[in-house]
Image 1 (tube, rainbow, N blue to C red):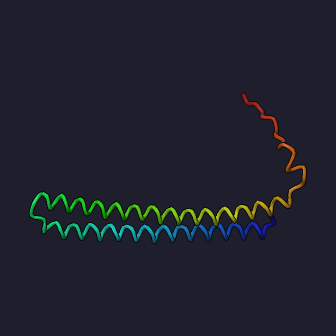
Image 2: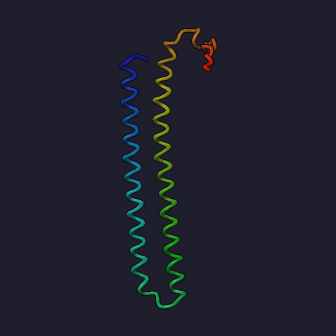
Amino acid sequence: MNMEGTMKLTQDMTEGAVELSKNLFERSTAYYSQCMALAQTAQEKLATAKTPAALVELQKEYSKELWEATKENYQVTGEIMKESYTKSSALMKEAYDGAKDMMTPEATTAPAKTKPVKKTV
C-alpha cells in the first residue's frame, strides 16, 4: 500500500470512528432522556398512590418501562456497533488486499526471520 492509500485508509478509519462516536452519543442521549422522562412520570404518579398496593403497582410499572427502554437501548447500540464493525472490516480487508498484491512470493510463504536475542548481564 502506497502512502496515498495509507492516508486514505487512515482518513476513512478516522471518519468511521467519528461517526461511531456521534451515533453512540446520540443513542446515549436519547436513552438518558427517556429514563429521565420515565422517572419524572413515576414521581408525578407517586403523589397519587394512596395505598401500599398502589405504590407496589407503580414501582412494577416503572420497572417494566425502564427495562423496556434499557433493552431497546442495548439492541440499538448493538446495531450501531455491528454496522461500525462491518464498515471497519471492509476497510481493513481492502487495505490487506491492496498490500497483499505488493508482497513478494517469498514474503507470503517463508517464515519470518528473527534475530537472536542478546543476553545482557
